[in-house]
Length: 184
Image (cartoon, rainbow, N blue to C red; front, top):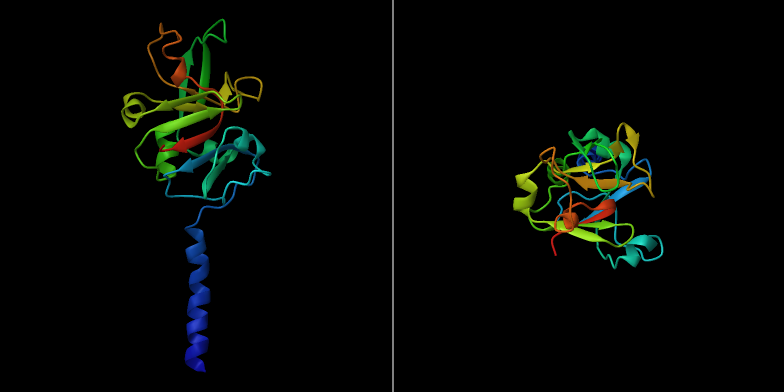
């Protein structure tokens, strides 16, 4: 009896430590969902009713990671000052570095696809990600990017000050990002 009680106490004592290793669901509103080849998850499978916008993009996954703004802001941040086609003058964008987001998720180094609210998609290969300091911008000039204002996230990278995006590069400049898929 004493051994059974001791074993029960040992197991009960280790459960909180095991749970601490698991990622917790976001406390705030989810602004980014990431699925695919990731080692860290905090939400269950795709639900076509609950995930109606993801359903429109033909998403499907068994597990994913849901980021709220607070979690994204807790990661190392980057800034980019650039003139985009959407702004008439240079603007400073800030948000978590893409490589930090991927590292946090223990993501495989494979093609990463970015999906916008309107269904537009862009992608980067691992070499593209390593070649530049890509950020998932949450803010422009210190103000949050809202939905309808190229938010919730805008994927941008560092580049020379005179670089202007064009159609050839637009596939990498996805705004209104809300979903990422790691791998095909």
